[in-house]
Image: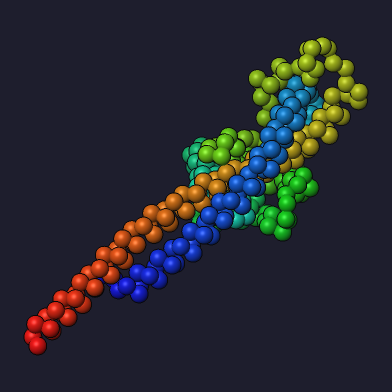
Length: 294
């Protein structure tokens, strides 16, 4: 039976942990609202840009001067999986779910005979080094920035585009967690290089009235500017979605940890009281026995 002193130390230790997890839950809840608003505000632009690019791409499909970001390299052998995770842990299964989705995609591609490489954007994606020690193409750390903005997304996108132009990969897939609610964050994977033409969005007119659109300058020049921008916007969107998902997942994880700590404190308190009562009873029996002996 555990001693009273040891039980008291454990109870105090769990109480200290409970204070920390409760504070972390409150901080995550405060950050969640701002992150959620930013993620939701960024969706319309990213989705509309995808629709515009799809519409223009469909019109120029098969053209002789189509950008490699649209037509591809002509090969489909080396696939780069960009894994966007957080810089910090204690966020429940947030990072684990993203990594698991990326691994499933990698296994699927390898089963098709493709070569898979990984681009890590965030510290928590480094767990993939255990499974693919020789397949990490780059490790882009974002922890040096207090707040993530479009500039950081542009840095990642520019690096990806430079590596694509250098022939280091043929296709790039981006994995992140889409924020649905504080309780639900869905791991999502999408092809960003070359730009995948979504047939459902290619028919969406650029104008709401569906009128015939004339481009100035021509479509090819517009695409030359929009395609790299689209990659940066999709990376930025992933960062915004991740920021909201991370805070939602951390808030829930810390809430569960706080509840579990409370349950443990109750169990330890009951054990402490029983142990203390047993010790008192033993002392009384010893006193009575001593008195009777006299």
